[in-house]
Image (tube, rainbow, N blue to C red; front, side, top):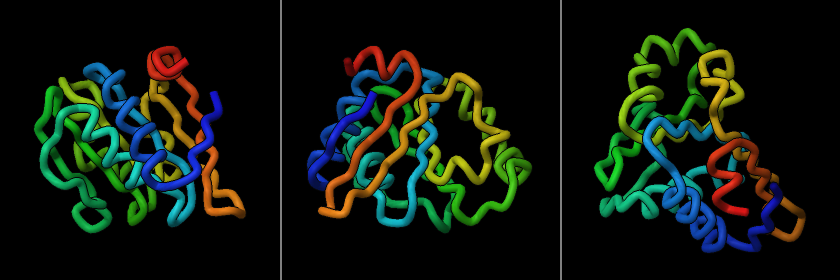
Length: 144
């Protein structure tokens, strides 16, 4: 499924829809370059999950944990060089737990990402908008 997002607000709004559709054990694997909108999308997902606190990029902490209707675990794999490093963070405990996981830069640790993950690719366009490609049930089905 492809969705056009003309600005940051629409990217966050799409994230909020994804958050409302997510269920426990949903893993969302984000792909996209610097500034593509991954963290903005994660802010929206958190809002859709009922997270009240501000959502920030976990670039240096590697994972941020938030409480909402479901726990939200926000990973950033930018500084990781292998799936093994993600596994050392005990990622599977989060992936198969009672919350929703979002993994920015998932392509860096693809071997550790569950096969059932929803893949969200953010593609920046020349006019500043972005095209978002979403692949994976049940999120793709819930949004269509």
